[in-house]
Image (cartoon, rainbow, N blue to C red; front, top):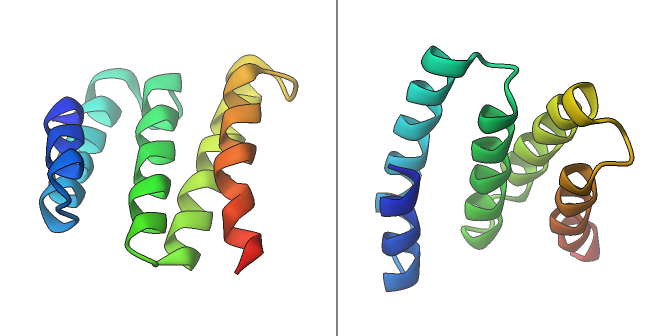
Length: 94
């Protein structure tokens, strides 16, 4: 579902990838847990998608959740946390 969402994003759609990404999150949370690294990755992807849709508060909330999970799983200095912080930066430029 996450890869399908990427294809829809490449086509320029926003609604189709949003639905796919949310379905992907539901599957990942059921399989791996809501606090898993894979769930954090999907939250980060949702954050980017919301950012493209100009839903900046939603984008920030998803990225912050991803950061929280990644910090717990990989540590505050992990590459995953750094990537989320980079993705969050444009939020504060508006």
